[in-house]
Image (cartoon, rainbow, N blue to C red; front, side):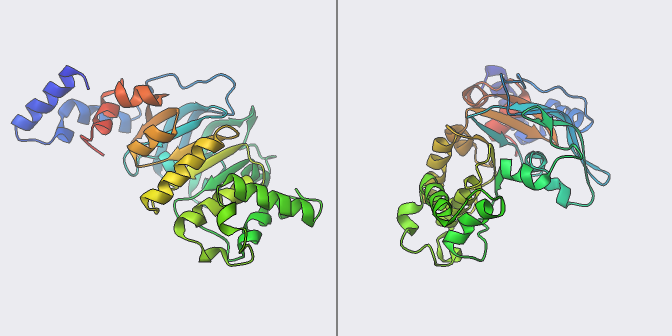
Length: 297
């Protein structure tokens, strides 16, 4: 934190007000709400897998995402952070058109996956979601066996010619998700018999079984204990060698541990984006600094 920011906080406290009542910061937030804002940092990357430009999301009359532009790199983890309700999960759901399931939702702007508009009318949404998998906040295994949870996607997408190939996909996916040794002797048992952390790794195995290019994770560790969280984080680090990963997290420590690039959202706008180390040690925008240092959010 720079000296002026420290001095500002000291003056606010001496006046008996909380730091989040800082008038300049409040005015900045108001400008963000009014859309008068440009993202701090470089939103572009070389050869992006996703290129998003001027993305807006509306839920009826509510303007949830405001003119967000950002690239998502291959073989990298992008962490999206910000206060509750800031729009990070809404933006994440734009990337595989999960917002299509909400009748009042409307998305404008451009979201290109490998140069092709994912909101094109010719886009097969089922195929899109095979390319861009998603892991949700709470583990959501199907009410099937452990084996059938992983085999489901490859089976419906025709990725296995026979049972031998399907067995190999299940084995490989569970192994990559760090779960094989724990479940190899009980593949026929219900997936719901697994612990919470195991269920989340099963959901990751289910996601990678269909050979996606991108994995979206919406607070994947929020319901897990510290040991299970550490395993998921280790897994994310391993998977980024193969996939682009975008993770929404409320844990700044987690974002610092697992990501190479971080994006800070506030009131539906992308405030700042940049290398994770810089964002957490030398944020350039006052709102980012205030959030990172715990003065609001």
